[in-house]
Image 1 (cartoon, rainbow, N blue to C red):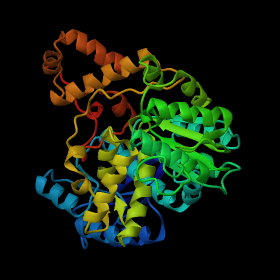
Image 2: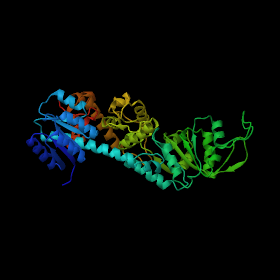
Image 3: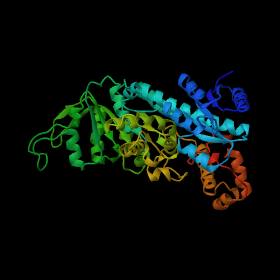
Image 4: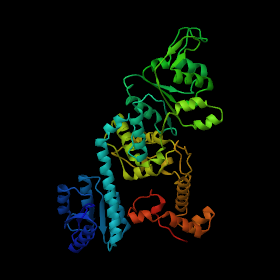
Length: 484
């Protein structure tokens, strides 16, 4: 039988040990039993466990004292407390001392299995994050600091590997903050030009004359103040790569001169007559729709097609949330080292908040949030209290700005996703009361109920057994739905 995890059960009552042993073993868990806290601590020192179930009331060392000892041995071990007294005081005391959750006697088998499953999943997530610290450094270097394991980012990595060896022009598209310059650097560092210069041009931040002078250089007397001749960035990038950040901001006259560089591989200095040959690879990035700009007459059509030889689309962070734990860990290590706090870690509740937020500022915003948390931290763990208020209190639902990738997008899938999220958000606001949610949405309750069934809202998490009664930051599907 497949083993789901290893569980330590500590209870002075033999019948309770036998019940829990049979229940958990039937579900595929490997169970070890102890009749006292002392015996349980010995087992915990000798064997690795994914979770522990500890009775509160035991002779000698009681469950709360054992909880403290277990946390000293392994602070990440999820400990579930069992008590025959359904008292709020006992539960609060246990949770304050680090218990993952508690179970009251008599308990229902399904409730125990759900809590154990949640605890083991939390343990596995922590283990994955620990392993991440040990094996991701090579991946950081391979793609010049780009972090991602999601299918969307693997497609980006594949395109980088395929396109980098060529001399073709590359257009990188995506929202601000997605890491377009990192992709450009990765292309350069994986190309035959890697030992030559990589030059960045902040397009559109300079007046046209100054931009052209910066790009192509100028001759003496080309404009007021041009006392000496000067070479430009194209000279510096010869035999290397030049990256135009936000190329849609380049004025029309400069667009024409850039087109000449791409077509003829030559240019003239500002105010000069001499033609200068150059071998540069053009990599450009934009968060604008250049095709729309072409239609509006704000961007040259011939330049657009020269740029659009190979397109790499960087998805926004909200569309690749599987990468958030890896990105957060990377930034945690980066700023932990800078601030002499190398042993910091992110609690599961804080990570939940990061996973639920939609990150309109993308990876750049996530980096800022983690840096802030590291700087303000005073202990070994970064919890929800160090997550900014705008992330903690962000609404579950908003309509993002869509950037349509060159290969197109499924209109039906987008509308379905938006509709589902709107229903979940409204149910959350209505406290799970369908009638109230229907009133807020101005639809019939029967219509809302049909949509809830169609999208399996409120059922999929329970079927998967991922409810977490201790978490206040779960998305709505884990909540209880009521008709009235």
